[in-house]
Structures are given as C-alpha cells and as structure tokens.
Image 1 (tube, rainbow, N blue to C red):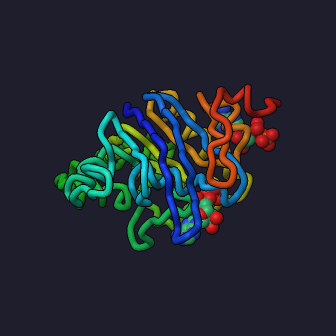
Image 2 (cartoon, protein in one colour; image 1 turned 90 degrees about the vertical axis):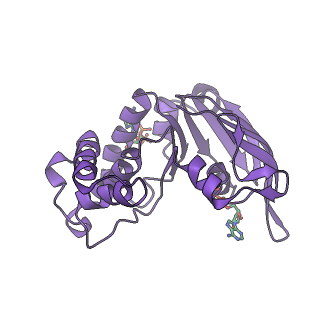
Length: 236
Ligand code: ADP
Ligand code: ADP
C-alpha cells in the first residue's frame, strides 16, 4: 500500500486560487476522506495526487517520489508519469464504462491495452475482480442492463484489477439513486479492510464516520482540519 505526502501545494485556475498551501499526510493502508462544501477544492486536491491536475507549487510525493515534476517547474516525461500512475487507481462520479462491452470486457480492456496481458488471462483476472465486487453473476451484462450501483462496482473492479497500491475515489456515490449508495459503500469498506490506501471525496458522512481513519475538512481551497472522524464529525 502506498503513502502520499502533500506538501505546501498551491493550484490556480487562471487568477483563481483553488488550493492554498495544502499539507496532508496520507498513511499507507488507511482511508482518508476529503469532505467540505461544494467548490472547496476537494476534487482538485484529489486529482493533484495522480497529476490529473497540475499543481503549481509545492509537491505531492507517492512513496517518497514526487509525481509530475522532476524538479520544481520541470515536468517529468509522460513515460515516467504513466509509470507512477500504474500504482494508482481512480473511480469517478460517472462510471465511464464502454456501452458496447460487457462488464467483463470493460474490466479486461485495461489489462489488455495498458498491461499487455493476453486476452484469456485478462478475462480471468477481470472475472476475479468482478467476483470481488459482488458481480459474479453479471459479467456478461452490458452497462445498460446494469443498475447504477452495479455499473459503479464494475468501475471499481476495473480499477482494482490493475492491482493499484492507492485508490482515489471522487464522489463515487453522488450519481446514484439513494437506495443504491449502500452497495457501493459496502464494496469500498471491504477494500479498506484489505489494507488498500484510499482517498475518498464524499458527502456520505456515515461512511466518513464509520470507515475513515482520518477526515480532512476543506473550505475555500484550504485544509481547515485533519483528524480522526470522531473529532470532526458528529457520530450518530
Ligand atoms: P469540490 O470538489 O470541493 O466541489 P473543486 O475542486 O471541483 O471543488 O473546485 C474548486 C474550485 O475550483 C471551484 O470554485 C471550481 O469552480 C474551481 N474549478 C474547478 N475546476 C476548474 C477549472 N477547470 N477551471 C476553472 N475553475 C475550476
Ligand atoms: P445516514 O447518513 O443516512 O444517517 P449512515 O450515516 O449510517 O446513515 O450511513 C450513510 C450511508 O453509508 C448509508 O447508505 C449506509 O449504508 C452507508 N454506510 C454507513 N456505514 C457503513 C459501513 N460501515 N459500511 C458500508 N456502508 C456504510
């Protein structure tokens, strides 16, 4: 499991400062939830961790290695960035599945294209990942024949099939009908139980309270509190 160190990170969109001097340690094998009002910079910070957003100053270290830059202001090569991203899985609010492929093909595709696995091996690894998210009986379904919760679990399976050491979740349940939220959170809780390092942007305070090891609260681009959930959230 990976660790992440975020040091003095600043991020601008033109003249607008989206992140101000963010310092955060994300310990290996633990769950960190990022919470806070809409527009406070949670998603931007999450995306700085895999350099989907380029931070302007400070640094983000994955297992001690800076992601995105070889030196301040000097971007690393695309090849090196891809190499670092191999260990990082990401799940978005939208599931981004290919509609013309079955669940199993959706999961296998990355293993074939990115990892270069032979088709048969990719298919069996995909099946294993889908079993893990409780979709053993849905592997041959196309996304249109799956519920939103099932589609999001396929997206999670697609990420974990790559055997990441770090998983980033950006509001993974926000696009779901309320009755489907629980099944996705349950899968995420199981992953946490296996000792995966997880960073989760979420509005699910129940999940943050019960599953997170630490909660980071953001406001207006600043990190205003980082602590154990019980010290930040009112627990039911
Ligand atoms: P959150 O995830 O907490 O809702 P975001 O990280 O998505 O917040 O956004 C933080 C702020 O940055 C918001 O004010 C948003 O409007 C702004 N922002 C996000 N992405 C962009 C962008 N690509 N260009 C300009 N402003 C952006
Ligand atoms: P509410 O926010 O409605 O008061 P909770 O805070 O208990 O309810 O949980 C919010 C959501 O998170 C619910 O969908 C619940 O199923 C889910 N949830 C809470 N705790 C866990 C957990 N430990 N494992 C999996 N899902 C959980």
